[in-house]
Amino acid sequence: MISAENTIKVIERQLIAESERRMLHESIPRMLKCLNMLSYDQIWQIPGPSSNSIGNLILHTCGNARQWLLSGIAGAHDIRKRSEEFSPDAACSKESLVLLLESLHQDLLQFFSALKLDELLHPRKVQVFEETGIAILIHVIEHMSYHTGQITFYTKLLTGKQTGYYGDIILE
Picture (spheres, rainbow, N blue to C red):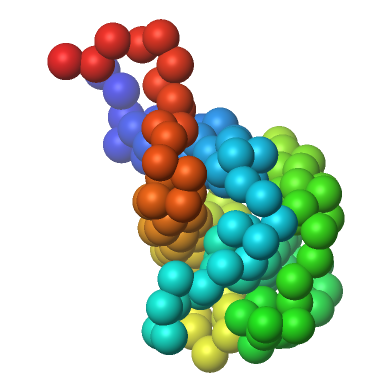
C-alpha cells in the first residue's frame, strides 16, 4: 500500500511532467509550426479592433511564461514589460520570434530539470497575485494553451490549411 506522503510525491512529479509536456512538447512546437506557415505580414496582421496579431500573442505568451515561471518560481530577475508585448511597434522578424520561442523552450527545459517538488507548495508574489507553485504551473499551462489555440485558429484562417499537429495519427 502506498502511503499518503508517497502518493503526494507521485502526484507532484506527474504535475511537473505533464506541465513540461504541455508547454515544451505541445504549445511551443505548435506556435513554431504556425510561424513557419506564415509570412511576416500575416504574423503581424491584426484580425480586428479588439484582437491581437499572432506576433503579439507570441511575445505575450513568452513574457507570461518567463514572468510566472522563471521569475515567479525560479527567482530570475523579472524584466517583463507587458504593455510592450501588445504594442504595434513590437513587430520583429519571424526569425526573432522563432529564436524567442526556442530560447524559452531551452530555459523551460532547465527550469523543469531543476524544479524541486517542495517549490510547488510555497506561495510567492507574481504581478499583484500571491500564488503557490502549483497554481502558477496551472496558470501558465492554461495561458499558453489558450493563446496557442488562438494562434492556431488564426493561422488556419489566414492560410486555409490544416496545421497537421497530429501527423499520421488516426484519431477516432
